[in-house]
Image (cartoon, rainbow, N blue to C red; front, side, top):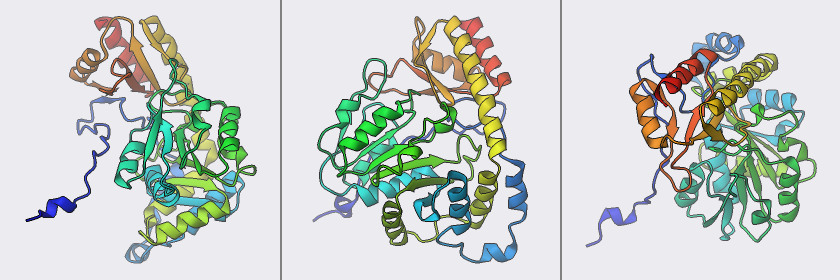
Length: 352
């Protein structure tokens, strides 16, 4: 007899970063922002009423999509929001990658892409980064069922120039191209693909409140694209889960999006610490690509990454180690406060 397990959809799940309960841990492993969100966020949460909690939230999330549309100078019909950018990206895979042709993404990248492709039975081909961990533009100038890549890439931190992004879009008018910009606010001004939207109806740009806006715990992500793309996304969303954003998230997201000065100052502090960290780690014998994110992807000339990861963990400092081909001798280090980074540097100076 057949077993009920024969009909189970089996995938290898994504492995999230460790979330320790010990508050004394120096946590540099999941690319969270070390600074608090805008004060307006907590004020907005305190204004959430009993009445609003007992009612379903607005399925269109209009209060947030309107605020984001104003902030990014687009129509509200060009904005889609979800429960973190993971929710937005998963819905995008489900909506747009259905041609039967393989989608393309880098071999070293956000590992959730492969999980979603397996989950939704989407064929895919991983394109190899070059020796400098750069996305090779020409690898994406071939027949495909869709394209997705982070820019800057993760976990490498490398930024692709906007001209190369434009070349990929020009070569793929028949495919949806998703640019995952989770870390774009830490890159030089003008790096975002958002400015390419008027040229390309098939471009979807995905961003998040988890990094630059210090709201990883609230789970807010969004996409901006042509009205046609967003219409298709909403059709899929309303067929799957109409009420994705809760009342508290909508209120907090609106407040955060309105306070651009706060998040820009937070980004400035993270970038300053990142540039200082590059100098400190280079002096300690580490090499790394020129990260344009809120983390560094580093390799030491003598110390093995696995051994260093374990030694740091015993000292109460958590970084991220990926036991994967080509990157198993690298550590990803989130940029924390200056005080947190000093604890890391002091340990390394004493133990390398």
